[in-house]
Length: 431
Image (cartoon, rainbow, N blue to C red; front, side, top):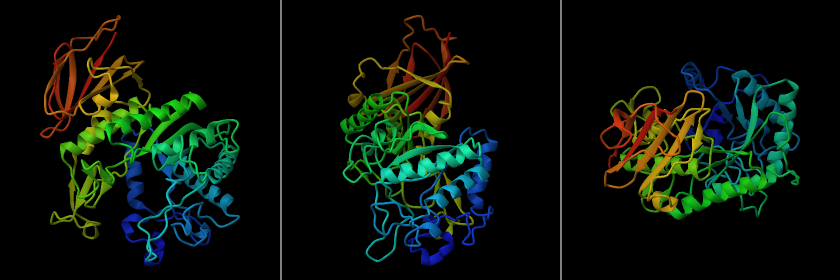
């Protein structure tokens, strides 16, 4: 982080900088980032099972330009000889906060340089696959040496296509490069390295044929290289212009945006087969669709500089639509095949009616998430052929639409009403 540099960080907004636990003299100050630490502890107290610590930039003491953004835009911003020190830093922080996972690079395919005026929008550093592999090898050895439970997870690709292609500059084709034993950058056999590859879902969500095709290519490449490899979707929000239907700005907390988020989640889960789905970012003060929760200033206005100490907290339909998944599809569940008759083609389903289903083997709980993108309500019936039987004929139903946020009701399994422009989660038990 570069927050301690103040204006000399050359980052345009202090909302986009972070404090660094490492001081210039090599000591550590664990009182930094008090707000983030409060949320970390609050999450643990509420039973959040996994904690990921991820790095956007190296500490500025280790960077080539003494900044938390890149001077060149094509390789890791690190001074020669400091990679070992950076690995030590990551291990030290992970140990202090008991992180389950460490993600040491973020969106390595982007340049993360300053604009022509010398000011960067946010912190970041590119990295080549060879540089990431060298860092992971150091981290693996250091974590194993101290018997750390933390595991390294890599990728954080700027978009899905970098996992299976786009490798003209050594920053793409990451599934093959990192997890094929024939690759020089193979890290799949190292201790304390999770067999997982992560990417962000930006820029690949429209049109619907692209949404499906890109994620299918990810799944196909995993099957070719290592079918046991997990896939994580580790960052998403409503970013940029999305086929003139949705846009990052201005802020929109309505149900159309909630449905869009639910659609992306459904296809990440069912087509890309992800086992983790993560949102960026939890709280936002901006006139931008990057938050689940928003803060306005005390007068109710969007004013980031005037809501750092006090203000009004607002929810969003993105929050509640995500909750139709995250509140019910819990760690350890298994996704099972599900299809709505007449909507088996995923491209057609993406603009109409989508379904995914999950089971808890030990408790016999079943979770079904249905998304209706259309303005027409639907009546569905749960097919219980093949020996599958629900524990009773009534299902719990939780609906998010323009008027409701996870509103609970009960529906019979032979007449499930799915309202227009809504997300409904059904839960029950099976025998």
